[in-house]
Each structure stands twice: as structure tokens, then as C-alpha cells.
Length: 85
Image (cartoon, rainbow, N blue to C red):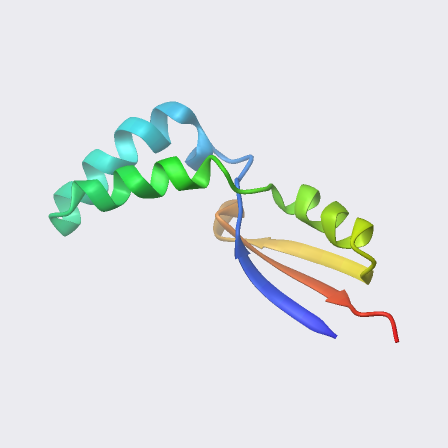
């Protein structure tokens, strides 16, 4: 069995371009003093697969019993898959 905690592109408002590109860097930068880190985070989030896309990719790669669920409004997910014996 394999279990992965993966960041994903969320269907929630957290991945909305206006939030991710404007609000998150401004708020995160204000709170942490490092706006650049949150600008980078917003850009990198755009390249992540959504959870269901990740699950499909695991099935195509040969994993079985693939199941996942979202955490924190879909910002992160846990996906479980088994390697066939």
C-alpha cells in the first residue's frame, strides 16, 4: 500500500486566479513579510493536478484501489493507492 499527501490544484476559491494571484500574495506577504514566497506558491499551484486527475493518473500507471479525500477545503488531499502484487 502507498499513501501520498499531495498538494493539488483545488476547485475551491483558493485556486481562483484573483485570489491566488492577488489576495494570497498580499495577505501572505503582509503576515509573513515574504510576499515573493506567496507569489511563487500561487504560480506553482497552477501546475498541480486536481485530486481526481491525480487519482486517474495513478490508475493509468497501474495502481489499484485508488481513493482520495480532500483536506482544508481542498487545499490538500490524501490519496491512497495500492501497488498490485
